[in-house]
Length: 281
Image 1: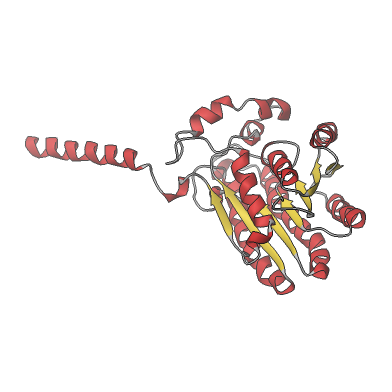
Image 2: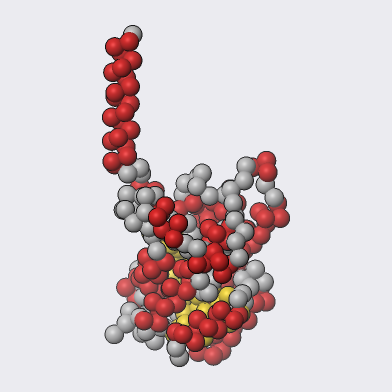
């Protein structure tokens, strides 16, 4: 028996990375999944690989008509929607505030905030009528700490965290749960796409990320899409029936603090420097 047996789920941004792996795991756990994304040929190929419990709908989450059609079509086809995973997103190289390209800023807010609102807006009446449902959104540790991502990305993800709490306070009264997941350093193509690589190339060029990310947090391995997928399974399942307005941070301890060994080495170096200075005084 799977944790998601019989559930109907929509996953946006499902043609690579976290979305693709989450679709795979949801289906393994018994769900029927509608994958959504802009790359039709790739999406259809992934759905075919995943089998009869997967289908693909081409949709751009920045376009309200696309989001509305995706959600209405899924409800009409299956009679219900149990899970909406708002996962679509893109990266952006960090620029200084004085160099901010406002068109890029607006695009980031459209995809990472406005699109989440659209998904919630159109799925809410369906889930409210059912008196059940789980809305999950991909946030980020960038919403908690500054300096590691662009101003636009960090700001958008911070907005997602509060949007999650705000909407949870409303929809919880109708039995609908609203939560988010904040990935840390996860090996996906979003980083390559953010510097302008072709999406197909970026999705494959991740070996360097895996080596670097293994050193980014206390747990000495890189985070993988499967780590986020497993958290999403929990939030989508009945095991999380009393969890709402919450963000699950999946980061290997990244925002907990510096690796203890690195801190110890730094303290030892500082102590030695102070001792040398004292002798020279």
